Image (cartoon, rainbow, N blue to C red; front, top):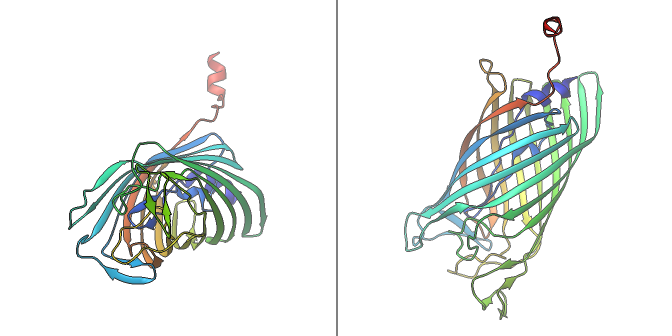
Length: 319
């Protein structure tokens, strides 16, 4: 009963992974304990802005006057469709613009990667005011424009096709909840616009093998049919790669690790049924080969119900 109410009223949001100035976009409902109801489609726009001036060169924290402050703006179109109350299909497509306040590096902008997810809830158990649910989520991402990944931190992405596999559990007691998930990301090789590059050794090739990655996400807070207020802790870890060398530019297959803390708020407007507003922010607590970024964002989403309309007695009388 409680789960059905949430399914109709809660919509997609966004948590931004801050890997240098490179964003990996993830619609929030692929990583929370919310399901869109059958035949409901939620879509909207999310804007986020992040910036950093300090970064970790390997494990050494420093700044670089030649870069100044590196900032990134993102506008993402996102959506979620309820195939059933237990099966959702989601997508996200971001446009990203990166720039630095100092130095000679030119900013870059453009469409990044299209992300698609399938979210399945095989188990939901209710007893009293408590609900426990298990989820399995699978996702893929692929570049949609011919951007280069080879000019970090100005590049708008890593340009690697990915497959993501996630297991998640959600527990709610009254209006209080906690959600935990673990994700494994398989990353395809990346092609550069040059035939020679150096990692820890010289490579006479334009193909770069990308290390896989994993992440852990824990969120907790207050959740009702009208609003959500939640704190989020996330840890991203590259399973391999190598550290940046002193005073050198980042490379696409560097080891990029980060621990992040964020806050997310959603509110469903009473005046317009199905319309929701979202605000969020986050900071990078620790990292490796990435910027110590902070971000702030907001969005607006609307739910359309495509369920077949039931005929009323008045409609039947007209016939």
